[in-house]
Image 1 (spheres, one colour):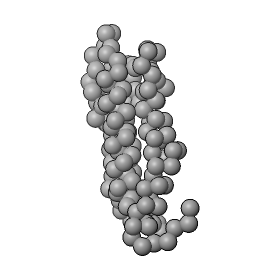
Image 2 (cartoon, one colour):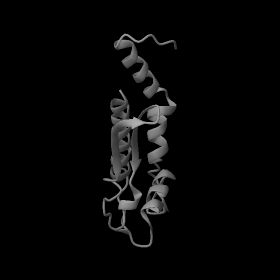
Image 3 (cartoon, rainbow, N blue to C red):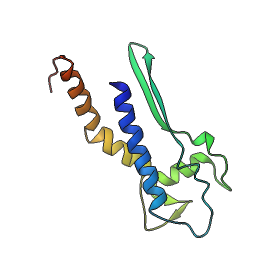
Amino acid sequence: MVDTLAERVYETLNYYLQDYYTGWTPSSYRRTQDFLHSAVKVDAHPYKDGVKASVYIDYESMDNYVNATGFQVAAWANQGKHGGLSVSHEPHVWDDTVNETLNNGTLLKMAIQYLKSNGISVRN
């Protein structure tokens, strides 16, 4: 179940990364596409008293930028900026991902459905 939930977050993050790249084309700099391919999903594994999976943007691997760090590029993308520039296409890559998976209840609904389908009683 945890892998399924992580996969949903990973797919959603990649959707917003793709939207970020297709929604605006820069004329003042050349894209490396490091950010486009920065999403990482770590499969579920035992953690403390449960199970943990991770989905994140690997900004440390984004080292091909001029005058910006990978962290800065990811931060700009979450502020609706492209290369630090304010443009008409203003996605908020990470916040949009969290809103479409966690904040709107999608992951919770998926977890409840999974538990119920496996005979576990769940109170909503």
